[in-house]
Length: 278
Image (cartoon, rainbow, N blue to C red; front, side, top):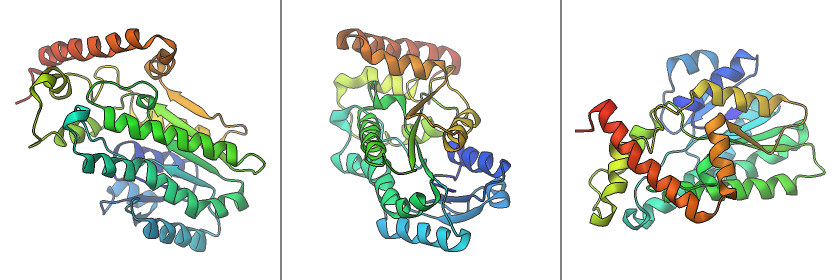
């Protein structure tokens, strides 16, 4: 199997979960070398998923070496955080390159081999693709596009033996929130969004504390999607993810109040529990 974004967090947990089950794992990331625990258990490759030629080259190398490809796991990702008005369009394009165009390039490269092996495509998405929180608009838009892309792919592959699944966590206890906050540094800020920045920097908007699940639970869900006889189209991870996902049936005005209210309350609670950020 081939997994992207395996340099830490969810991706490393996925690589190790498959290795524990006896899979031959090719773990990739744009930043190398990968963690020791991944290098010891998996075969590793550098991969920038925004480079279509590199995606094709890595897939071809895996198939040549292993003789087949049974599963592609798209996990590479990051968040360009901030109010939509304040996020430069160039950052939005870069976000879509990783979260949407990367899986597209890998699907194009991997599907011939996956059809031969009756393999799986499993992509780590987010419930933000269904219900967007303030300060996460660009990231959520890319995840919504990811959802649509995989829905189309799943339907188009009917009649083949390739299955396509989305794994949809809410918050996960990794360094994701910190890296997202780093994207706010040195960016001009529109004053009217002060409360959004407060929630992003001091609150629980990006990491969900204490509602976050752990990376191993997400990895276990990915492994399920890759191995069950009849995989589902979507796998929310954890009760809160299911709540957020089904919240879209509520009127928009109600959902808006919930998100805005959570942002403000989480700021207060975050400052009380962490003392705010310097």
